Amino acid sequence: MKALILAAGLGSRLAPITNDRPKSMVPVNGKPILLKQIENLTSNGVDDITIVTGYKAEVIKEVVSSKYPNIKIIESEDYANTNNMYSAYLAKDLLVNSDFLLMNADVYYDASIITELLNSKYKNAIVTDIGSYNEESMKVIEKNSRIVAISKQISKEDALGNSIDVYKFDSKGGQAFFNKAKEYIEDKKELKLWSEVALNDILDDVEFVACPLKGRWVEIDNHDDLALASNIFKD
Image (cartoon, rainbow, N blue to C red):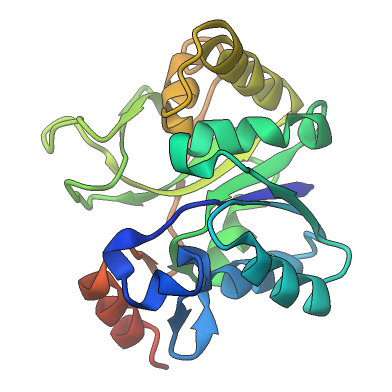
């Protein structure tokens, strides 16, 4: 199993903390979000990790390379004009024909979530906080035990719950995802789309299921989120 962490974002709503570091290096109770994600993976035996950086890439390179020299780092030089689908696409050659986990680097969560996701019954899966609803989060719709849509625009009535932006792909699902990303990025020249747009497009062809959340999580976009995470993860 491989893992791809998307960490190119600016994190402007976390300024001034992000004036000298990328969003993924903002600490929760002293531990940067990105390092927590890496620990979540390595503690579950996932050591083949790729990180796509962008804003303040040198900060991530210095810290990660010193602690985890085997982690591969790709720099998105056009991070200011692109979104995370573009970041994911930069890593396609390292992940094609592989099973892998995909995650955004602004989510602080428990390692137990990865433990559950690695269960072999989940081939293509979206970690879902079932029953929760947040306007800013991606939501999913489930029909007949299969996810049929993922979007921020899904209504509360239709939503199974929030995606926590942690995904599992088998080789077939990953190939379909990167093929769809290629259509948007290379053919349509649409560089500012969420990776979930490509994911949503393949749900008719690739069966994704909801992996129930087994642990705590907070997506950290602003100072209120950071304060919430610091409180939830204080123990």
